[in-house]
Length: 169
Image (cartoon, rainbow, N blue to C red; front, side, top):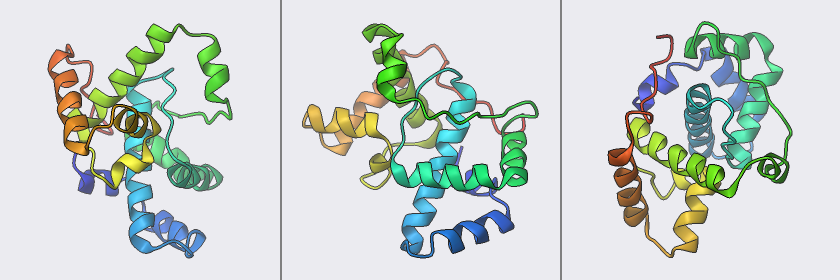
């Protein structure tokens, strides 16, 4: 899914609303936060039950959407006719308490493969929105290319589970 398709999910009203709400942000930062939020939103529809952490900026975009209930409902329907992503304030520690470390690693690797398969490589800008990717890159002392190579290997090992359904399909 290309960025233009994702950006088409945002109505003119909502884009204007977000520009006003986050007028103190640099416009490029806002557009990046919107785009990464949309990627999160599409993945959340494909990976129900997964805890996919994203940074505060993208999370703030999500919260702004939630408060505009009609726009939020319309966005959900654009993803899938029966999709509705419920927000939870659950901390990762609470989520992790009920899952094995193996399951958590599996979900993180699935997230990485899903992102790269459907949206392309992480960039130095986009990685800042994804704590899992940032953590792996930093803790293994990898550059962005090494992280992307690793993610591409994960895609090759996947059984097609990293494929996302196109919004509205």
